[in-house]
Length: 492
Image (cartoon, rainbow, N blue to C red; front, side, top):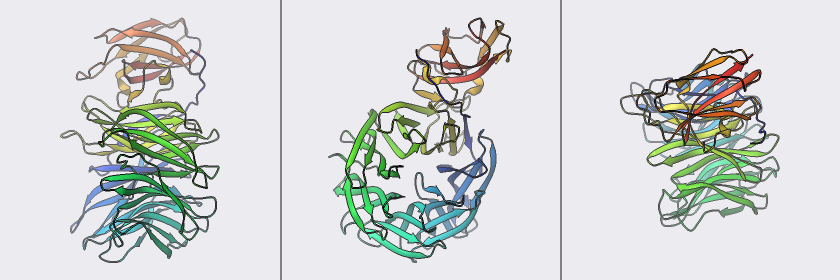
């Protein structure tokens, strides 16, 4: 196997339950102090009104919990808009699109704004009493103001909208888009190179049939071009857009390959400023699956995207990395399993490239009855999508279990070159091996060094590291389908 260079990023997996209630991670941003702010929703109970509240969980680059913040407003529930709903402002603050719900059933679109330390400092709401305006995603505009997209039922059935504000949050204009008798939704907005906007969503094209929808707007919110980008079937997932460095627009979505909602393939599309599709790709198997965000990776302009995919009845988080033209480099699935959790389910709703060349993905770890509530899920990988570097060298490995790091232990560590090494394998009693267990050793340059079968029931392995020169090595425990656990070995 040839040499495969990779970056040595910090990696981790963790679940956060800051309020001991049902939590949901929607988006992540990196703050000026190099910590990560995960924007989430949490259940909350005040004395008068049962509500959801927008919260933030801050972690450092090793996954350690730092602190939380909460935007709790009496008699008003607050909600993050959707996947990747947040964006960094030019001064290091975060703006988040969302909405609020009052006890008089008024739903207002909202901008939630944090300070540079991630604490919530400002709430701006739009919409009158008795109306319904649901905000989804926000961006800061070049003049220091903000643009917010979403949908409203105050015109037509449900129509998309844009709100443009000045730097103080005062409304400059509001536009609604759509038809009187169809459903139209906006879920993403980004700045276009001509001073206007790219907007992504979904619209009804026939009864029970929806398509991903991309619009191009001028600086006043007037439509200058639009188009559907779906199949003849019901493609109910929205278009999630990002403006590329070259000024073109990228779309993440899932397209329906059959007649049900469980026959999708995830896809990416790139379209130029004139609305001409440059390329479109589909990935993976036909199943219940979706993508929610696509980001460029500097300086290669590779793409990273995230979402979920069902394996039977179990949803897993997925990460997909492609070239700048959409050719797949790798796709990996992520779940978790430990002594308490036998069926860890989850999904990713945002992913960001990190300065060390890796990726941080956030989403939800779904509840398991009697074991734990729904939690915020945060996974940090290296450039190859590995939690332990070198996982990509294991043949057939596409899925990773993220919670069994303690199942593999190695000692002595460090060890002298040529010395004896012991490896302990301690899997939970309820763990079912799929095929054969293997122990794989890779070096710091991403090369496969050695691999051996681990017999069923084995708890301790012994080997002499005569093949290992001085340096850092990575150990991987896997079966035929999954990376299970890993660790590091330093040879001196």
